[in-house]
Each structure stands twice: as structure tokens, then as C-alpha cells.
Image 1 (cartoon, rainbow, N blue to C red):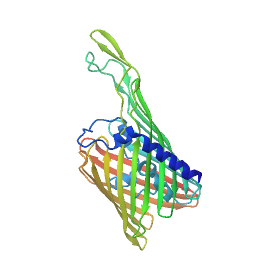
Image 2 (cartoon, rainbow, N blue to C red):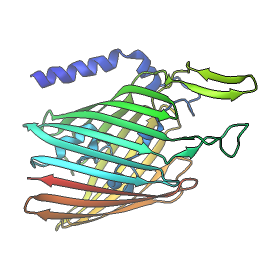
Image 3 (spheres, rainbow, N blue to C red):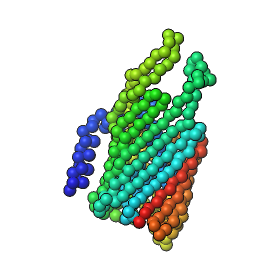
Length: 335
């Protein structure tokens, strides 16, 4: 009863935040491109979902559910502790790491903690007066830390909620905020077809802090007041089904519609094939995005041990401007 009251209270708080809803569903015809910060929140942290073309909201049944749809945590098995770590490699020493730890705290209720960190290498400070560098350096970093609570309300319906602290810093200026994710999954009871809805990064605008000193013809000028920055909220609607599930083989296909607050709508399609719950192959494609031009793909290997299960996943993406992006994820379930 207490958990139902908590979920109901959180949902009501989200409903009364009219400013955040206005960000999530802007008026028709409004320009949305380049209107938000915290862009790292839009980067998928795990290799499995990337291999499926990021069509994962309805599929989410492992620890990556904290990113895609927190309701998916209820699909975890009865292991005592679940842990996942991941690494994403970009160009120019830009890397992102993520870690998730989850535990079943009571029947049908899961609690998880998550951490994401993106950073760049140090870069030289250049100005109009010193275009090749003035001897100073700076770096760029992003941080997200949060907790997740998920509950299976019935055998077919589950709901989950994230609360995250986010911080973005560049040189001596930083922005911090608190945002929420929530979603549900519903198994329609036929052919293991799942329907899911998720909202990520739901929050209000916030103003940056810190100061920035800039050299001008009149001397040093220090700036301490900045415009408010919106968060990149996104609404996802997904469906997934197992078209093959027999003889130790399973083939899952998934589709997902994305409605971001800072870009056009897009559509994702993906598939995953599993053999004897040991080997996995994945592929997918994102429609309606400027950067995507090749299908993504991925592989997975699951190994059962005496102490639990180990799974290794690899995901591959190719972007027009960002180039090739590699992701690796290691998941451990301890009995």
C-alpha cells in the first residue's frame, strides 16, 4: 500500500508541473532544434540496445532499463544482486562510462542505483587574440546519478520511476538540475507482445552557475549571468514481440516512435536473435535522424557460472560526422 501511495504521489507531482509538460509537448510549429542542454542524456549507454537500433523501450528487461524504461527492471530474475558496467568510445578521447546496480527488495519490487559520466580530454583555450592557444586548458564533463524504483503491479503490467541529479560543466561554468524518468510496460498476453511508454529527462529549465572571464579590447570582462537551459525530454512509444520462440531459439523484433523536445520525431526498428540463451545477434536502424546512415549491429555472449550469470555485449554504430562508435557492456547477476 505504501509503495502504491509513493507511485501515485510522484505521478501527481509530474502532472502539476505544467512548465515541464510544455517542454515535453511544445506547440505545433515551434522551432525545437538547439533548444536544450545536457545532450549527453540522449546517448544510449549500453551495447545491447544500440545493436538493436535503439528500439528498446518495449524490450527493456535488463539493467539498461534504467535508461530506456525503468519499468523493465521488474523483468530481472531472482538473483540477489545485479550489476552492469559499460564503456562508449568516441573520437578525440571522448568517453562515457556507466554503472548500474540493482536488487530485489521485496516481491515484485526492485531498487537500483545508476551513474553515468562523460568526459573529454583537456583542450587548449583559444581566443581572438591567441587563436593557437593562450597557455590555459579546459575540459568538458557530464554527470548523471540517480535511483530507480520499479514495481510489477500485475503479472502483465509494471511501472517504474527514476530520479536523477545531472550536472554539465565546461571550464568554469556549470549547470545542474534534477530530472525524472518514468514509464510502464504492458504484456498484452498474446505471442509475448509487449507495449511500452516512457518519458525521459522530465524537468524544468535551470540557470548555469559559475563565472566566465573573457579578454576584450577594454580589458577582462567577467560574466556571471546566463540564460536558462532546458533539459532534452523525450517521449517514447514502443512495441515488441517474439516472432520465434521454440527449440531454444528466440527472435524478437521491436519498433519505437520517439518524440524529443529538441528535434524532429524519429522511428527505430530492431531485432535480436538468441540461440540457447548463449549467443545473441542484433541489428537495427534509426529513421528520421540526420546522422544515421548505416544499420547498427551487435553481438552478445551469456555464460552461466556457479555464482550466477555473466553477459558480454558489443554494439556498433556508424555516423556520418561522428564516425564509428563502439560500445561494450558487461552484466553480472549474482545468486
